[in-house]
Image 1: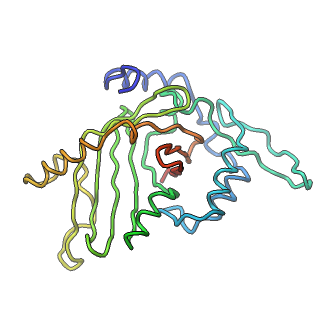
Image 2: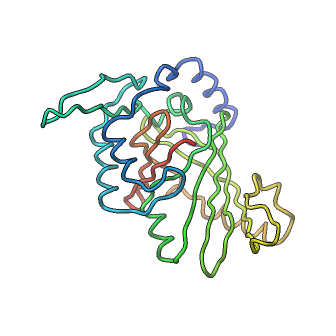
Image 3: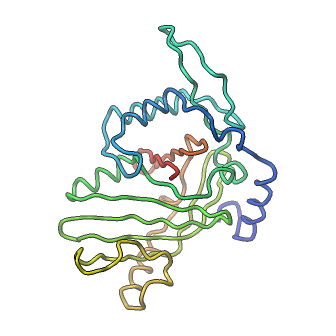
Length: 250
């Protein structure tokens, strides 16, 4: 892991975090005006949305005009240029640090806006639905459901650990990859991913997929600046492609 952290180190940091930082008082924080406008522009909060210039502008506005706090407590309203009442949109300070990120990270998150993923899916005439689960010990699992005309349907999954590079940058280190192709809908197969690599039936393909995945787990796909973080929404900067990934807690 980054900064020399291994898994035992992460567990110690997550234990410290739970006693040193608390956003429980903000669990009912009102949604800021800019955040609400961005969410309202989306078709759904349960799966990946198509990209548009309007949505990207609203997301960027939410980030550029955010109020940084250490507990998500913000003034109730401020006055806009046209005397409109505007609720500030709060984001946690130092979102890349383990003790900050871990205070809201554990749970299952759904990627709701990621222009590069939507574009790639569109070029292939298909779609992706991406979610990931972060665990309190610093481990994580991600499942991407795919549906493409030629390839068919199924799940591409990875697992590994997540942690910190510095106060604004997070890191994911995946070390396992697997797939679950879905057969025809009348086959009786359950439309769910394999939760772990160990759940995948033994085969040569299983080993090949895992080896290919490991070869692709490089730093360019591992380091993500965090440009926004509150108790149910996070935005990562994917600097390699100059885009952003927004995920919402389920």
